[in-house]
Image 1 (cartoon, rainbow, N blue to C red):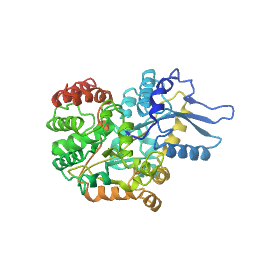
Image 2 (cartoon, rainbow, N blue to C red):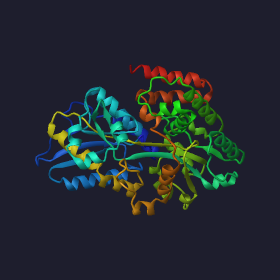
Image 3 (cartoon, rainbow, N blue to C red):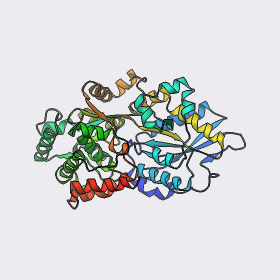
Image 4 (cartoon, rainbow, N blue to C red):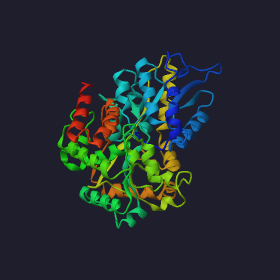
Length: 439
């Protein structure tokens, strides 16, 4: 989701075993018909917990839902720290056919895996019969959450992504503004390096979220064909001139412009390096803006040092994040409760709550940026204005459109690309081979 957030490095790996337990029959705690009081319980596993940036939003929506439906429905949150732990848990449960009533698709294209197993509830009639809910679906949100003309998910968060830069570090290197072209971008990387500053935060693990953002922007700005590729769902051929050229640039970035812990490192490493002032640039979405003023993560006044930019070539990621999916359960009452939860979590009010609590971009273009959000997150308002006025090329992210099995392949092959053991063409061939396994 891919929405990437700052997660606890100590907790994420340690709780993997616990995240994978409880995957027996559908009669377990993940879908209960209720206790003696008749309340329908929705067990909801989520990575939006602990130090995850989205945890406060998730907790607030659960609290409001449980208050509204007191005596009828109750969400019980199950903490699964770490995006990859969550994905692994869902994959295990897919194998047993035992999914929780609601799962969050995020930026990992979980929807296709659930639909392929015929475990997703068709929400088409429910959405079409509710005018307010239907109005929240833009054309792109509908495409993101539909398969074969049927609606299977509902989004609450948009994904408008560029990159952040440290204005103080730029100034030290004699850089006055973000690069407009990729040639200029690499010239700036050289200037930063010459000034003793590490230019880029990057990663390889957990699908390499940050690195994939740089890579996709390069593909989308290389040519019209590259932009078309970035807007193609589940591509099967990565042996394109645009992908190969982007892989060559990524290899150069690994070898010259990033930190030592980028190879094998997770998103957390990349984000923390930027927050600590150790790197000058980080690709990520506006949901991170709240972290810049969090003194438990950064030094006092760090937020004032951060600027935001579109990628070179006036490229911006702009697509709703794949939303909440209702899964098939033995008890239809649990499915009904799950639908109500998804409707509540993706309502206009919920999207506004997420915007004001954490600076999240609403999935619906009918939900406007409030004065509260503008005052709290001026960098968000600045970036959205920039994306609106200068964003000429737009697409979804690479990991949102690729087959889910390619996420692991990315993490496995990028270190080989970085070391030079694999060249750009070989890297793209491994992606093509992995995509073919879905045919």
